[in-house]
Length: 47
Image 1 (cartoon, rainbow, N blue to C red):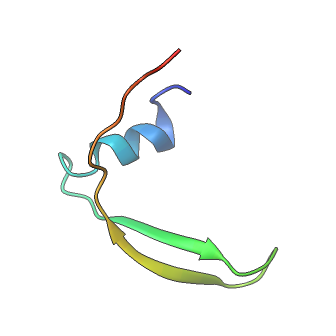
Image 2: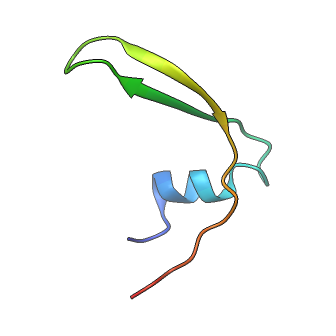
Image 3: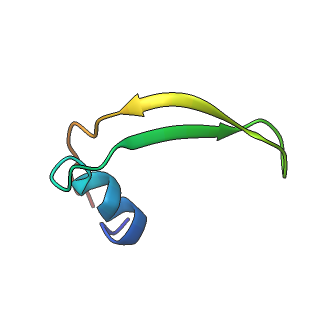
């Protein structure tokens, strides 16, 4: 997986002073549920 677009935003959110909020879908096309605010503690690349 490449660190670009959405993955890049998650990896860099703290440095950009952005909140990282998690939502989950309740069913296809239905409402979403707020789970909470999180922090990306780190990431690594593996082949």
